[in-house]
Image (cartoon, rainbow, N blue to C red; front, side, top):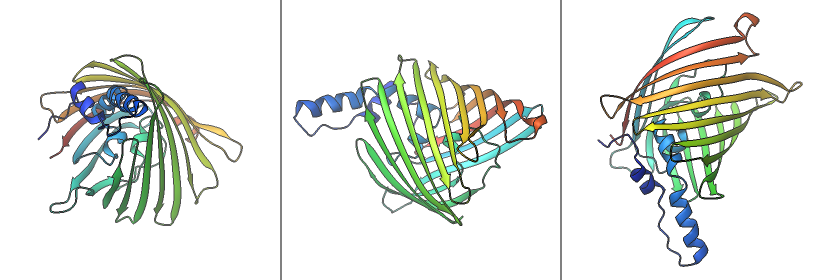
Length: 295
């Protein structure tokens, strides 16, 4: 079993792309491609962000997390969830067996919604290709659903990275798409700031769901990190309004074993889609997570 903590050396190996060209411009690109993304890779791996787990170069992963939360409006709640991506024996490594929900888990932490959690479903994902700047995969589940995901990355400078992710999917009788644009900027070896934006449309509703948010990541040690988040979520119709405003802080630490993590997240939401007595609510969540990579 491999160590789940991604060190700076690991990040450099992940980011490195072999330069097969001799042109000076190509050499400069490969140097930047190796150097600028190290902090982003470390934070995304430590917080198990989908930019790593859904990328076509990602290996196998089993993630079981247990959330214990309390809020004044809803009291104590417990939620458990299992996500897995496994290589099939005697099959190409491009094909994976997946067990996960259709929820946009990568957006839920930054853009929480009042919708119910979706149940997980078994499926197959085929990683069509992964190049230096882009990747593409297709996922089919028993729900039934089918989803195509394309990701493109571009480095403006050694410290600034643009990520474009496009999803097109069909879930039962619903057709939808989600466009996500993220801008990462490395402030130092300890700090990374991410500006995330998305637009989502599904044909069963006649409006776009829109969101914009900032995340500041802080590395404390190889086994400790913080993330500070603030976001706005809204809809363009019927008259354009903000459905939710969100702020939170998450402390995450790896303890005892390489595969054991815990998180503490206090957050506050102003949710205009809820009843008036539940509209403004504070929540604190303790998460215990078991994470196995390349099992």
